[in-house]
Image: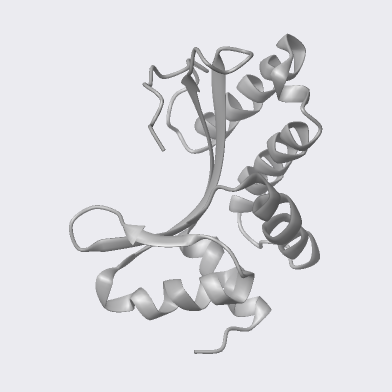
Length: 152
């Protein structure tokens, strides 16, 4: 399956998700881990689309999500910064989702320079993440979830 840029934009406008998660993580220098993620979830019958997106961008993983749904997601900072963001800068989203993308982009750029590791940068990340949640109607607490670090 070959994908075209404008198809990817439209599909992302309808199905994509730009998210910035934050979790307490005592081993991180700021005590918090910032986790940006770009993801698209589909029913397992459409797994070919998710693998086509993975090939199109050259990054990410396709994993089980919940029940009969699968998810293609990109979490690696370098892939977000060097592949996902340049694509959506060149091919802008058309819906309100563009606002989430622009906020997401700000967080990824802060992280790329390491600014999120200091108190001021972390405060900015929290503000952007809270704004993204408010735009989606998901509350505005800006609170950090508790999370135990995963073992690798």
